[in-house]
Length: 420
Image (cartoon, rainbow, N blue to C red; front, side, top):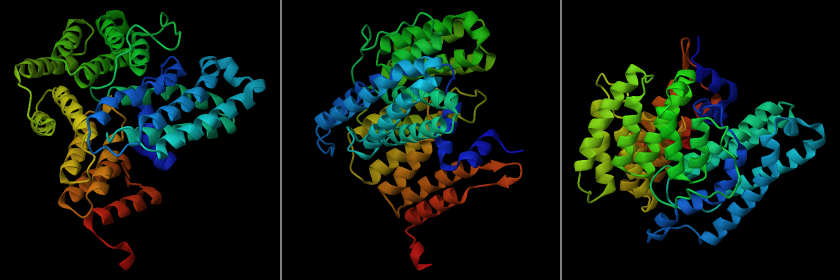
């Protein structure tokens, strides 16, 4: 019997990246309205990083802002339809839905191909996966599978959350929203996700923590409750970079009588990490601190506490994305940072997109081909990809994926495939 991930990969090939990601997202996201806030999102999230980088190759933010405006306008046409199941499936509105989706896809493709507002490596794969998901939604709608198309569009909000909370930086719009959304009937997780996607981070953290403290929520939907807990931890560590907020989250986890024993064990380890974090001095280099945190996390990974090292990986991820955002030069230091970012993302992939780490390993190879670092990155990439296609009957990898690995191996090793 093949693993679920293997079945997904065999079914959809390269699109498995986005599908696997969607399986890691709670299916109860409440509204596509989140996406309309993309205009505020990645642009403002990376303004500080861009302005502080003397070597940034990004074009002026005006071009990026204009592109986000166009994307937002396309999105707003879909909001009432995606939020209303009957309207989305109404044959009389089929042309409107189709045209709006096509416009949105065209804008998303331009965002993917155009200049980026930052050197943060997370932006490119997130933009690519958004483009892929919108293409899949259009195909599903045209083939009559409208429920799947609507679900795919609705879940695209997760790209906003991932982009906005990858690291510290950018404004917090708590207390105001560009869209009048009533969240009273949202679940604690959906409410927190809505606020996180719209850069209302203080409100998001309050919503997540309220959910973490809610014994009934944990009892009724342990999966969603645990995701709320992990989201709160990721937000407090990666965006807030605050041991005080992280401590509040962990105390809420420990104080809920419905918290699973395994998570309570992890919470004890997180609290120890927070105690140590509070005593630390500011490092000379975020890259050096990330390296130290990763080594400590990898050492802990072999201990009995299943996820006790998560907080360390989150801190390392925040440091790496901040450093990468201001160091775009394709040199050995950036390649090393991409390798470390891949390791951090792979170790904490239940808080990220499930294949984000593979994208980092690829970028590492392209950054410094035919090098020791590129070969190290290829090793991790190959292991991850093969594992995803492995079942009880062996490895079943589509030709397209095998060819992609072959090409990346040649680049990493400095091989001339044409000469063979």
